[in-house]
Image (cartoon, rainbow, N blue to C red; front, side, top):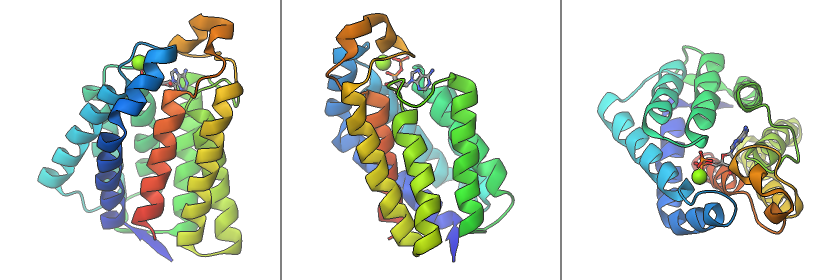
Length: 208
Ligand code: ADP
Ligand code: MG
C-alpha cells in the first residue's frame, strides 16, 4: 500500500474545490470569532497551490510538500497560511524524495506535519484551533491503518476531524484572534478546525 504523488496532487485539487464550495461558510465562522477573512485566505492559498501544481507538476513527495508549503506561506496573509504551510513542508520533507510513499511512512509524515503546526502555533488540544481537528485526524489515520486499508484509514481520519471540529463549539479560545473574545468565543465552531475537516474530507476522497 502506497500513496502516490498524483494522489497527493488530487488531494489538493479536491480540497480547493471544497474550499470554494464552503468559502462563505468559513468566512462566516471567522466573522463570528475572528476578522472574517478565513474563507478568502483559504481560497486564495489553494487557488495558488493548484495553479503552481499544474504548472510545475512535482514528481516527488518532498517537492510536492515544498511547493504547497511555500505557496501557502507566501500567498496567505492570515495566521492559517504559515500554519498550513508548515504542515505541508514537514509532511513533504518527512515523506522524502519518493514518487510513491509507503502508507506507514505517510502516516509518519502526517504526524510530522502535526508536530510542525504545534511547534509553530503552540496550540494544545482544546485551545479551539485547527489542532483540534488535525490531531484527532492524524491519530485516527494511524489507528485506521492498524486495522484496515488506506481508504479506511483516510475515512476514519475524516470522521475524527469532523468530530474535532464540532467539539470546538464548546471550547474557549486560547490562541489566535478568537482568544481576545474570552467567553464570547463559546458557542462557535473554530474556522481553522472547519477547514481542516474539509482537508481530511478531501484526503478521504483522494484515497478512496
Ligand atoms: P487570522 O486569524 O490571522 O485572520 P485566519 O482567519 O486565516 O487567520 O485563520 C484563523 C484560524 O487559524 C483559526 O480559526 C485557528 O484555527 C487557526 N489558528 C490561529 N492561531 C493559531 C495557533 N497559534 N495555533 C493553531 N492554529 C491557530
Ligand atoms: Mg481571520
